[in-house]
Image (tube, rainbow, N blue to C red; front, side, top):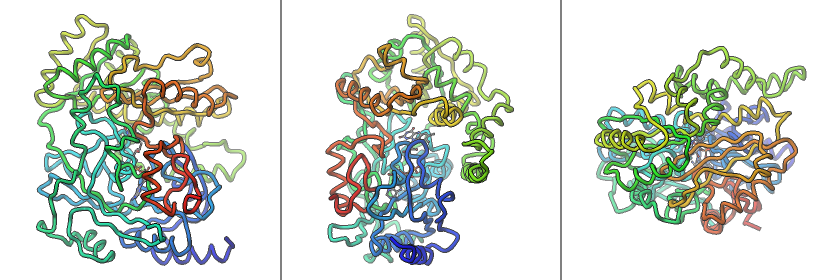
Length: 565
Ligand SMILES: Cc1cc2nc3c(=O)[nH]c(=O)nc-3n(C[C@H](O)[C@H](O)[C@H](O)COP(=O)(O)OP(=O)(O)OC[C@H]3O[C@@H](n4cnc5c(N)ncnc54)[C@H](O)[C@@H]3O)c2cc1C
């Protein structure tokens, strides 16, 4: 593409979104063209539309200029699926970031919501609070601004034991058909008109009545999960990204079309909640406890997240600044912080005497000046126990769990304590910011370390050996291993840093092969991005949804070329 063609495209894009909502300089694009933890690539521009109709016009323009489209929300995806990857695309890439279009409509007396393209889980929680309802999904990145639709497109899982991955059959989306024509598909179950412009404007302006909302048998959440998760003797994992049960045009689509809105169920809020903090030095104790709770309890836990001691330590040290910022300034401050961080890095890159990753170094330094942010009891458990489990129970389940844990730890290794409100908040936040710690450690020590590697795995529900045991010769290749996850769902996140010079791809292949033999599925909830190879069930879905391969090409190791050549 020559300079004039490029200029022409930028002018066309600017006409749609306005001058202040288009980014074309390389450095300014960085927060949008680089993944949270993995992958980065080139784009002709990042555009931030402010209206649904602007997304539609941008898509039309992409077809006219033969551009690749990457739909993006909060860009918290961990496997590189929300950004370009590398430089070997056969067309220019446009990133459409939807975060400005963030309205949430409450419908059906609060029992359901309609979330527009960039609406966030955090705002959904706040909006549902006064109605005594809760969202379909609570994930680690709720607290850092992850979107509702990014979650649905990734089938994101998260912490909720009863509700399963983000899933819906009700959505409004656009696709490019096999003749290269743009089509708007309204499967929201809300009558909004017939022409694209009319439909999009009516939705955006909430120009529809209760009588326009159709209630059919179509699902607005995964209604099977609570019974699936209880199936502790099954060889099949409870949830994973290539599960055909949860795949459709929007759910698990990995960005292979453009979603304008989704309709989702909400849930009645519990009257009471209580967090229990458990510790043991014996992995079999947690194995037994998981089986007992899932098979015997009348009330399923609301949430249950595991953390290994090393992960506790790393999170305490390297995610402390994120923890403190969220706790003190709130999630809404994070975009401002990331903007600041980016500016610091731009300046540092221009001045050769300043070190790489300057913003990380500053944040880390500042975090040392802040007093210990974790409760004393949690630190005591850290010293006593290698394995930690944060379990939240609600209503009748609180007494049931308390009585059960009392008896259980009389005869099994370990113990527990009931968190007060402050400890609950901190335990949960500590777990939610765990994903960031490895990246910070790596950024600070890059020159001395090898590659970062992460595995997001779903173990068979009957798997006893849930905690990874590596043979010594393999174990010696790692500088750091951090384990955390959703233990009731048997989903584990295993983050590694290799020693310098060790071939990450080879190690990853070896590890995944051993897991495959044991019936483990991967990825469990982070979606394939550019980190995992998509299984045929996903590849076939992507080809069906996007016959010209215009949206997010290359995802899951598929072809990046037009028309899947
Ligand atoms: C600290 C941290 C904790 C995390 N905890 C969890 C966790 O507990 N559980 C979990 O499952 N994940 C977790 N994640 C991963 C990530 O946050 C989730 O995948 C999240 O749902 C992504 O939301 P997002 O708004 O950032 O979407 P993005 O990353 O922007 O996009 C995700 C995917 O959706 C597509 N997409 C986005 N918007 C649209 C649209 N309008 N139309 C079509 N496609 C679209 C993108 O192309 C991409 O493929 C965590 C990440 C971090 C950094």
